[in-house]
Picture 1 (tube, rainbow, N blue to C red):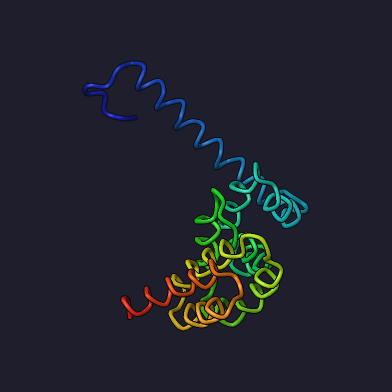
Picture 2: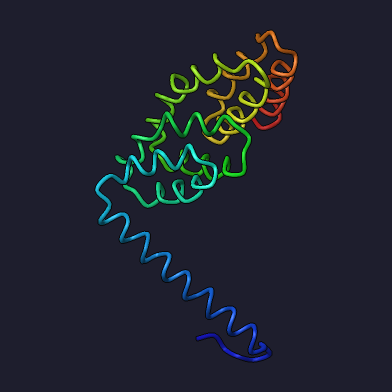
Length: 169
């Protein structure tokens, strides 16, 4: 229980309600992870539903690394879109083994970038931001690819990240 000090009764009641809800959330998460007979399919479907995505991504953080790796292509695809959960997607990717990510991310990102027609700069900027968190050489390669793109905005993204690399390294 919290020290009461200057807290109002309302503050204490609200805190108590929040604390109890947090306990219930952890119990429900644990039960789902222990008892679900098809948790990977449910999580995969949640990643494609904007309303469920945050819950699915947070659950991924509770899975062991081998299970998280199964979602890598889905995560890379989600990492290329500017949405409210993009930083959480990046966080999940950054928990994966670095060697695995370096060996596989370009191959996973290729179809995303190749199919990006309208607003391709969004995909490039999002992935460049993620790549910068992973490795400068990885970022350099994607920025170089962006510089060669037909879309002026994509080329500008490449220039911006080349400038960032020069400043940082």
